[in-house]
Image (cartoon, rainbow, N blue to C red; front, side):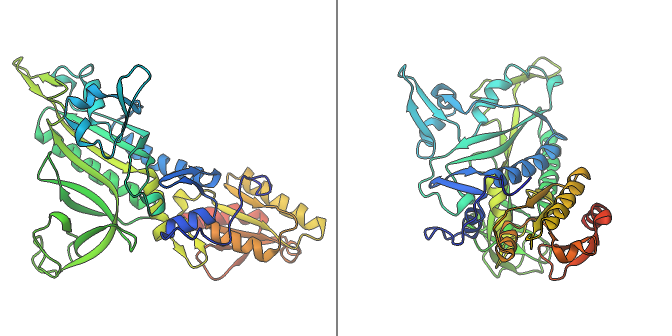
Length: 419
């Protein structure tokens, strides 16, 4: 993609009302645009990052269940069945339609998926089942803040599973844990599986936390064995011995929650009359669980972790492009022809490339923009490199660059990325 035609305009300074690193950098780099507090447009570069993140999520979720898409607009009756219309009134956007009917925008979908389940599940032979969606959610956060970490409108991957017994639930629950860890690792994050309150559903749920200064959660962590528990429900205190290994001391850390998983039991199946018949013909409520990942929060967390004083440093798997080609010293038209040839070679070899072909922009400004955007590889085509039939290439987070012949460039990138 040619940068001269891209819907992109970087900013020298971050908005003064933003304090979170992810908000400052993503706004400055023009990955997002803030419409109002907690509501953002994913601009072309941000959209590409979002697509990459969702592709990773989809690849892992497709191993567990089938994808579908549920409506965001819900009738009150579905929520009244579980009593959550009133319980969630402070966070759920609720209003009347033109016919006077109470409706709401879904902050989550347990009620809806349980109602759908009645038309799919009737026998033990129909279980287990799992289904997921990647869909827009709405939550009326009282104080949306921290950029993409806490929004009013956002994309969530929510997976739901249905089981006949706890053994089936436990087996699937562990599979989801492993899938989540794989997702976060591929996205460049180290996530802690953290015990948290199960609320009305079970003694414990599990949250996936990433250690970060911007985190709103406080986690007690044993660095010796990896045990982690949300401090809000912990009996232990910072400095206590770890209840798991008995030798490490619990350390209090700030963390960002990037995912959560809940064993729901029959909390939603019973009100929805979602039951199955066992081999004897007796009816039992279906056992359920739910598993969520906020896509924009995931992107915001990556930005919080992967940056330096010059800008973003995207992990390869979620970067909007693999390479950022910069045309510099273009007073001689032959340099532009040379850079065009490099761009053609990269694209024909399948390397996703953003080509900064802008005229009238100084080399210093192009280098600064490249650092701010944080694309993994920076490639410079100039009059100096043209003379040797090569380009200058470096990793965004590396200090030194190398000269690579055009004919060897795609092979160099492929080998370097594999390593």
